Amino acid sequence: MLNTPRSCRGMVTSPHHLASQAGLDVLKAGGTALEAAVATAAALAVVYPHMTGIGGDAFWLTMWPDGRVETIDACGAAAQKADAAFYHAAGLDAIPWRGPLAANTVAGTVSGWDLALSWSHAMAPALPLGRVLRDALFYAEQGAPVTDSAAGITAAKADELKDLPGFADLFMPGGRLPQPGDILHNPRLANTLRQLADEGLSSFYHGNVARELAADLHDLGSPLTLADLQAHKATHQPALHARVNGADLYNMAPPTQGVASLLILALFDRLKAAKADDFDYLHGLVEATKQAFRYRDTHVGDPAYMTVQAQDILDDRRALDRMAASIDPDRAAPWPWPSQAGDTVWLGVIDSDGLAVSMIQSLYFEYGSGIVLPRTGVVWQNRGTSFGLDPQGWNGLRPGRKPFHTLNPAGARFDDGRTMVYGTMGGEGQPQTQAAIFTRYARYGMELQEAVTAPRWLLGRTWGESSVSLKYEDRFDPEVIARMQAAGHQMERVAPFSSTMGHAGALVRHSSGLLEGATDPRSDGCVAAW
Image (cartoon, rainbow, N blue to C red; front, top):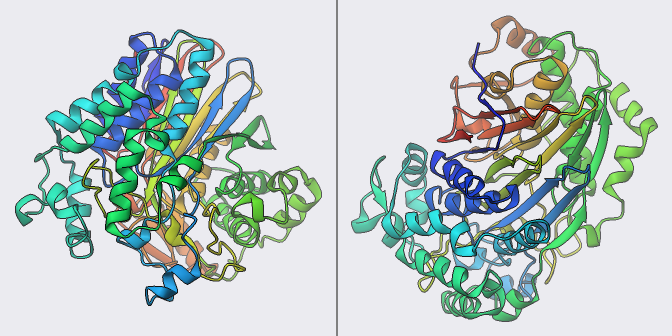
């Protein structure tokens, strides 16, 4: 039996132990879960730079003690100069994955922090911003140990990243690949964080930091301008919701794939599976995923360009019944379908008042565009490389358009009074890992940590992978895998604990005030609690 950490006053989980502890320290200093989430996210941007940074996007799901559920969309839009003509003039027929031309959307993460803190300050006395960012600033200035995963990713991607502006100087000093335990310093990022602490987070878009960012982006050849930064604003959005037996589920609205995460669980709720991890369970969730991804890839993108409302399918019981009934209980439906990539960090916080935060932020690919802005030390995302150059096509590039996002933070309220926040990194794996964690815990009664640690699967692509097979960790019952193969699934075995399956986590608060948490052994994280 895997032990699940428990406490009563506050709890943080994230994929890096230093970041989890940074968030817990803010809770101990009297901060809210929102302030602790910003502290955790900021620390992750420094100590986990291959996965996230302040040059990326973020989404928040906040579950208030009074029952309200609210979200923050901190996704940046395409630059006004970013259109098909811009890339064709550069001799390109597609947006490059790396480099300055891949840095074509505004980074929204810091605006999400700012809006979240404004919500916190409306309900409780504010901690000084410098205190919230304290640990992130320390690790940027004084250094943080390179993790095994960062060293491995840097080595794997060195050939495509080393010649990009600023990358080798920061992450491969002297041309040497970093080793686990090396100390990484980013003094320019420390200066940027200090400026934000002194001037306010809005400086990233309207102040001195914005001017430095814009100057760097211009000098390197990005289409982004100061006007693009100034036009950006994080927005408050209603959460998507779905009902399953015993719980109400919540997730993020488009441009994220949150609707796919909810669809998988709503469809599986209609299927028969006697126990977790048997054939009916694994086959049922995989087939529900195919249904959800078909809907997602047909309809989901920037909501300003969508022809349907994502909530409508979740409210249409007859449509859900038909989708579930179309799943053959014995045979795999044809696959593949066009798939998405990406990497991310997810974090969760619950404070002593029961305020729960599910938050996710990302640079898209590992190290994003790969460019390090020389004045600020910021690594800029490449989320806009997911755009196609046909402006009329799905996710077609247009100035001011938001790109499709795999990011989606999840939450649930149970009929018995429990509140749950959960999530993961991992591109297409995010909805699938969410489904595994939630169903194992909620439907089959697994301990929370066991539900996260148990073997996982992945249909389609994810972080670091290009194949679209059904990958599975080599800890499933061989008879279950044999039945899956016989049913027509294209199975691909991976290591027993594989980062391909994402870095997940979960927190639960019971009506008694008891807190439970889980972190992913595939990550460098921990549950920090008091």
